[in-house]
Image 1 (cartoon, one colour):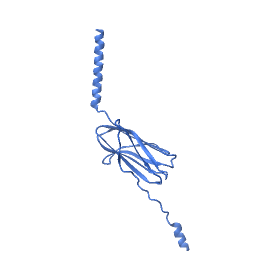
Image 2 (cartoon, rainbow, N blue to C red; image 1 turned 60 degrees about the horizontal axis):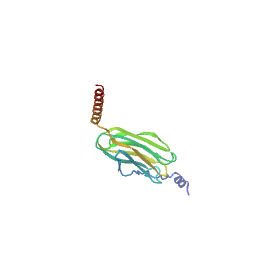
Image 3 (cartoon, rainbow, N blue to C red; image 1 turned 90 degrees about the horizontal axis):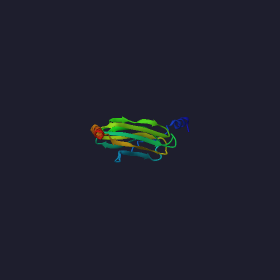
Image 4 (cartoon, rainbow, N blue to C red; image 1 turned 120 degrees about the vertical axis):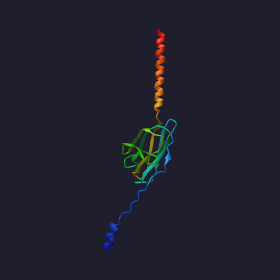
Length: 176
């Protein structure tokens, strides 16, 4: 073996596995009658460094309030998932609300809220990467529920006023 051959073998680049997008196909969020929402995903072993951007879809028919909490827990920060984003988008891909990271490490925790979504179609996107070959999972829970219309509040206040008026008249009739 010549000196040039030794140098070529020594300087040959080490092949690295390509990072793969392992995002799941978009899926619909199944809303319970009370507006509670539960969704998530899990990733099998041997996917270290691969990335994901999972989308979860839903539609609203009127003014809606969204409150979600996302968590991913592992034995240490060196295992499981690294959640890098949790956001709400309109169906056309326009960002509607960005989530906030609350905690990172062995447990990643994010919150996402919007107090007044208009009627329409939306998706929640969870982004991140697999930290180790042990795989990992995330789950989100919360509510996506209708916001009472201003007319509903007006009717409530009128009703309370009428009850107060009737009570006052009965009280006055008792003393007369």
